[in-house]
Length: 422
Ligand SMILES: [Zn+2]
Image (cartoon, rainbow, N blue to C red; front, side):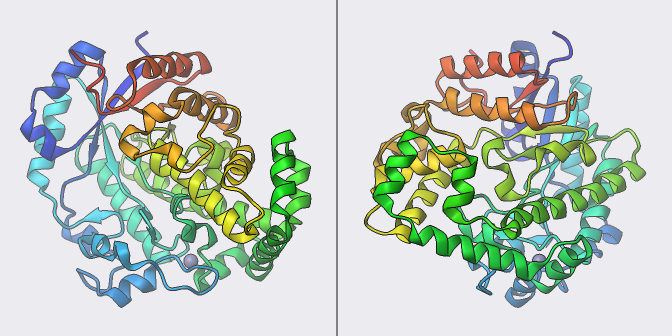
């Protein structure tokens, strides 16, 4: 199957330790593509387009550029050191351009396609507001440079999304003045959206936990959710607006990359389909700004299970003692579409992140998102799921790969390969 792409995430520092690793993967598992984290330096004319007023930026300058929560809450400062170690959003200051070029050239000489993996708006809890023109101009310049300066075949943008659901702060932003203006331009009403979010929360708090638990275990559908939360049009508008902001930005970044190199293969990873809309990923629109999708289903802890437990605890806090932990988890599984695969009925049941793949049915969990991803992505858009080849049971890995083929995905990008090679 020659059109099946086999990729792996690589970084320059690890390749210095294990220079023969890519050739070995090529020979043993049919590696075709190296996805190499950007570790170069930007030339002065690109670097000076940073939205940072100075490098490194002061805390107040970072705070001014990042996502604003609907309650006006200050941004989470825990990630500010990441911003302070960068020349601009998504690009670290610690690069070595000669070393990066040399690594790209060596991978190319081994017959591999090389995709440059670059960052975007989000770094863990921190997100640069996606409505700022200066930030958009920065990413256009950076993507154009990446596309044309290193001889790479593709750009694989990562973190082009709102913060993950396990950091709930990100679900309720960004509501800054630039976003209100962007909303207005795109036909949305920020005040109406915020009012709808608040009203859903009020309705949620009125629910009786015991009755909710009973209903959830019988079955819960689309109309139940609308009724239970008194869903207003503004709540759906909020999800659409955020996806629109992401799509609008990525359209600009791909256009800039293509104008610098018309042959560049431009794409980005997608959040697990069941919860993609919570981070502004509308998979049905992926073809508007990407030449491929990489469903990022490897982060079963940070993306999936942490979100499920965080939301269940939030439900318990909102509804009160009448909602048991088991019913809260059951409600969230049902609401997010992860019910019926045997996820734990207690918080402790998840164990530590390191053993998670042995505590939860990882193959069922991942297969569910791969099936949904293929349902929503435009027909024919190449899709390369990202899964772990390290730390997951080998039998589960094999089932996921064979399901990915059956569902019509076009390859696998590996995070770690310990379980794959001898
Ligand atoms: Zn904003």
